[in-house]
Image 1: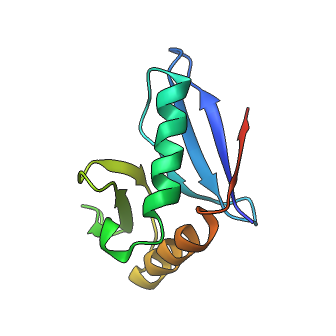
Image 2 (image 1 turned 90 degrees about the horizontal axis):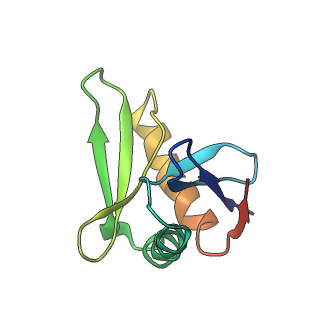
Length: 108
């Protein structure tokens, strides 16, 4: 089962990472000015993760692959790690889809 980890950056802003059951980070958020906004971002990920149309597959300038997860308003709510293959990226999407909806939330 996956889990969301909320962290506080040095500047006091909050962000989260979704980790798969094996502890690997599969999705990271933007910075949020408040913990409440960060929690709203997590809820948005949980809501949107099962929906295929919310994922945008990308290729970085260096040729690596990644994806973003977008909310209904098309705002990016999470960005994946980099993958060396497109199939790795696609497996990452499937991992978010299966881990995010029931993931627990903890703070570090």
